[in-house]
Amino acid sequence: METLGQRIKLCRKDKRLSQHELAAACGVSQQLISFLENGKVTNTTEIFTFAEVLGVHPHWLSTGLGAKKYDDLIVATEDKTLLELLRRLSTQQKNDAIARFHKLISQNENVVKEYNEREIGQRLMVVTTHSTVPLVTQKR
Image 1 (cartoon, helix red, strand yellow):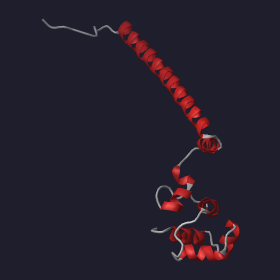
Image 2 (cartoon, helix red, strand yellow; image 1 turned 90 degrees about the vertical axis):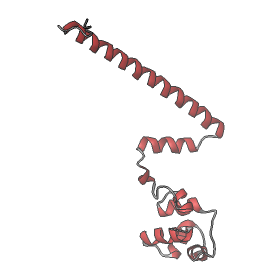
Image 3 (tube, helix red, strand yellow; image 1 turned 135 degrees about the horizontal axis):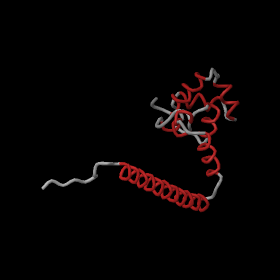
Image 4 (cartoon, one colour; image 1 turned 90 degrees about the horizontal axis):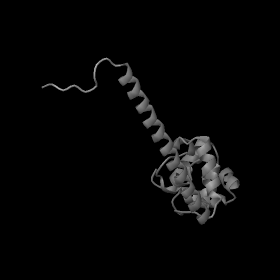
């Protein structure tokens, strides 16, 4: 889909809405819907409203790029919840949250690394204590 108007029209028809019904649901005039779909208007400040009503991702609706629907992003429910919560924060709060996430991830990576090292060490001990063949042999 090349234009915003074409994407709106496609989604509107997929939802089986008339221009009048879409306009009413979005709180805009039917004339705006017509102008958008016919290319007389190429942008709108109501992109998020259109996206919500049409059930599509606002970035895709605006640009034609990326996933059409949020579900196409294959995002877990917990991830969607985190995203919605993050959107409510100020820029500084978002930066603080990101720093905390980095710290948690680093801690988890260290725990996994320590666990893996311990597991490998235990496996080597089992192999060396139960092996009748030396692990390293030298020929002379």
